[in-house]
Each structure stands twice: as C-alpha cells, then as structure tokens.
Image 1 (cartoon, helix red, strand yellow):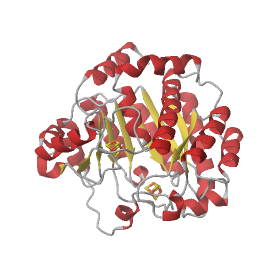
Image 2: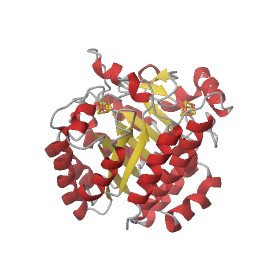
Image 3: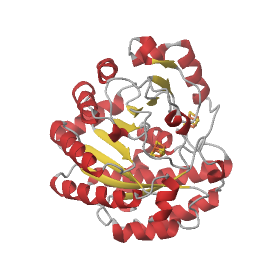
Length: 356
Ligand code: SF4
Ligand code: SF4
C-alpha cells in the first residue's frame, strides 16, 4: 500500500460524509439461503435495479468512499460489476472494496476479479466466499445442490489470482444460525485445512427477517462460544497489514456483538446514517440493514446522496439513532462505528500488532 493510498484513506476518514457505503447492486440471486434476510426482494418478480448509467450519476454526486461493500442478491450476476468498481475508483477514490459471493459462478468471478484488479487503483479488494457448512450441509442451507463444490472451485481460482496480486484478500464468511450451530466447529476445523490461503474466516450471527424463522434461535453464549473457537483456529497472522487490521476489527466487533446479544444494549454509539449508508438495488437509501425505514430514493433526489441526507426525514432518523433509539448486533455498523471514531484507534492498533 503506497503513501498516496494512505493519504486517501486519511482523507476519507476525515470527511463527514458516509464514506462506508453498502451497495446492494442487484435483487437477483441464484441461491435460496434459509438465513437470507433479503429473501422477499429476491423472490419478488418485480425488479427495478439501478442501471450502470444511474449508478454513474450516484457515484459522480457522492463524496469520497473509503469502504465500498457490494452485495445483493448475488453481485456477480451483474455483467457490469467491474465497471461499477471502476466508477467508484474514478469518482470517489475508493480504497477498499468488498464483494460477497455465493461462489456459484467460479469462472466469471475469477475473470471479473482480475479485471477489477487490473483496472482499479485499490488498496485492497476483498472477496468474501459464503460458506455455512461442509458438503451437503452447505448445499441444503443455501438451497443449491453442488454449491459446496463451486466454493472449492472459486477458492482454487482466486488463490491463483491472489498469488499474483498482493492487494487481493480472500475471506470465508459463515452465518451462524440454529440450523448449523451443532456443526459449526466442524466447519471451522475444515476451513482451516481445506482453505489454507484465506486471510480470515468470519462467523456472523443470523440477523433480520430470515427466510427460515427457526434459524434465528441462537443466543449470546452460543455465538461467543463459536467466536472463541474461531479465534483459536484463526490464530495464524496474515502478512498483509490491511488484512490484519480487518481481522483486529472483526475480533473487537465480535466482542461488541456478544455484549449486544447479551444485554440488548450498544457499547458504543451507532454511526449508521452518518458514516455508513445502505443503497438497495432500486436506489432506496437506508441508514442500515436493520431499521426498515427508508430515508428516500436516489431516483427522486436526482441521484444526489447529500440531498437525501439533508431531508427532514433523514435528519429525524439520524437523531433517533444518535440518541440510541435502536439497538442491534449488525457487524457492519459496529465496524463503521469503530473505524470512524478516533477514540478507538489505540485499541484497534494494539489488537492489529499484538493480539491478532
Ligand atoms: S443470503 Fe445472499 S446468496 Fe443467499 S439468497 Fe440471500 S442474497 Fe442470495
Ligand atoms: S443500532 Fe442497528 S438498527 Fe440501529 S441504526 Fe445502528 S445498525 Fe441500525
């Protein structure tokens, strides 16, 4: 990571705009995960996703972006995913891009990832491979026979690419739910030997309006028990500094999620709506993925995020969040609330270098 990249990171941290952007770029998905919180949008036959031209207008009117997370649906179903990355590189000096994938299109994923790495000047591109179980368990939880084999294939392709590009990171992300809590230790153990070149294995708690309601029946102790097991398995240190910072953040995050699940309260103020924002495939803007309250649609605000955020509706909601009117265990919000508050930097740095 060069000096210019670090300067760009610092500038994005100092802006007041929501420079952590979660962009659900498509409402299409070729999986049917039992823990999916977006299933109603995915199942709906009505699709009104933003076009690349519309995304260009959003990007042109948006300030600096430090972290861009592309989700969906399945982002790699869009043929213009590399173009979207390039827009944010060109217009918003984006430094980190994360793309979550169900791995069902291994060839295409490899091609697109290489395309992004060649065309964008990124600090770090992280691909998060979803994995909820081993073999048939994964296929059943994700609703697609043969999905596990595709995860292995995607991993194999991307590790080749990773050896050539030091700014490519590879994570595995597992959703912990009542449906896999009894097998999660096996999954963690298997990931360790079957996916040795990943930077991090993350386990996140099921959240939101899951397709299978029974999947939500897990408690704080089950979550923390799993996270402690995972921490031991993840003990090896990555050589990549950015990967290590992400890992430190994940570990601090996990402790905060545990606290929230146990007490129902947040340990630090949530910065969703101020430093983090969510855009849905049809341009609706939300402060987070948990509060089901849109603050406006970018199509109605001439694609200008700043104008959406200045609306009375947005300001009221941001005030409500700032005054701790709500509470949840969403990792991304904790992540943003840590990164955009300098008070937490000594702890993040300590964990990066000494306890990672
Ligand atoms: S969790 Fe992701 S991959 Fe699974 S159905 Fe939902 S959007 Fe698709
Ligand atoms: S606490 Fe949770 S629900 Fe409330 S704004 Fe933050 S992320 Fe959203």
